[in-house]
Image (cartoon, rainbow, N blue to C red; front, side, top):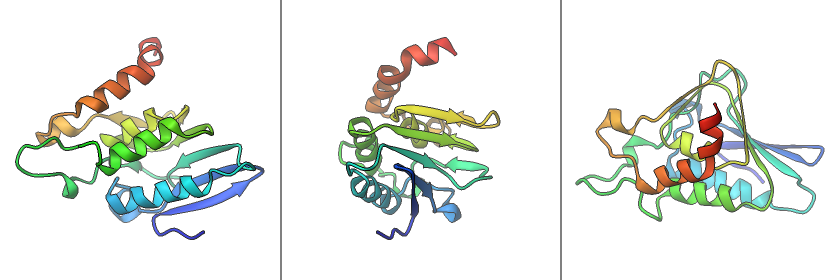
Length: 159
């Protein structure tokens, strides 16, 4: 299958989904997430043992997080239940095969939550993680806070 915003390669039963939206710093826009979700669905096959999510090698930014051009106006919750970021986070959490986030570069906002939903995170020593919504005057979504604390509280407290 061919995708516009991700590249998929399978090596010895391991599927690698490499982000291909560099001109937007792999921002989690609806079109990018739709592509990522389609790739994950297509890879849910018996012969695939695990999936790796990654940005291209040498990337300075793994993902810029939620596409700020898609945030709602008028003080509404920026991430309703049907928001694409909510959808990809739930899909990763419930996916029947292990998903590994292989991080190189910086991870901002919603992308931090997305990778925290994966089963394993492997990060380069130069990687940075940032919760950026407050810098934009946007409250962090309560479901996102719950996901972060529920899925990784013990891991984070040991760091």
